[in-house]
Length: 331
Image 1: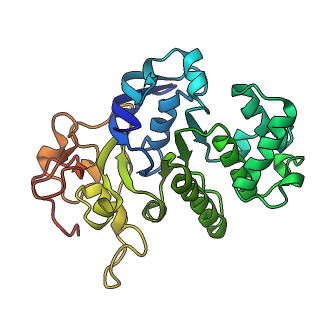
Image 2 (image 1 turned 90 degrees about the vertical axis):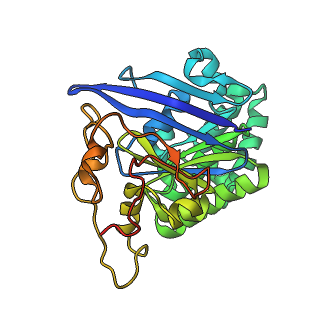
């Protein structure tokens, strides 16, 4: 049984130019103990999808307008009262933000911030919470943890700040962690350390992780299964090896063709021409059709295609391309 099942999730954002459907009919499952990656260009809806899980919206500009977010044993988070959802946040589902500076209080010492997460959900003394915070810093391999407890966020490097945020996410031993591009602003060495830390946590405790990124190399390194998003919709999903070794949607193939190291030496990198469509007035049919090098007139007609398996491939490898045969090489 899946620990999280998202069905036809729809989230709207209201802005000066109109209402954007940033998440439009998204569906996927996350299994116990797996790392599930969500990839796509900036603005594709991957972060909006994961913020929708816990309704982590700033202000009143965003709202879920349809679909279900079923957390196993808890119910539909999309319909849950805010007071009940507040008890789920951190305790059952934790969120790691992309920029640790936005997640940490700049005027509060690290130890107090980690301890407050613990005391908010558990009846422990300040001394017990501080000891637990110290152990968490050890768990995420922060050197000199006793000294770091009394540091302020600005006194730590970006990598150490991200480790502190991960420690806060682990504080209540959640069943599911959502990591929103946690390595984007870090150098390659620190990025690798953070990835190993998350994988170590999964391997040691069976915690499920949703990992959001635009980096297919990171997905290949850490994830078990993945979804590819474009313009608010999932266009392909399957195991990492299925999707990266045998991509079936033209957008996934185009992403791979545009990345160094993903094409053969005798082929040039091929950028994806054009720009993603407006989510306020999206085009008919497949939203990638205006940029797709193999699109047919039928691709730009009717409703957006839905995910389905292709004949002759694994039943759990799905894509949303209406073409019966997609060319192996997109030139």
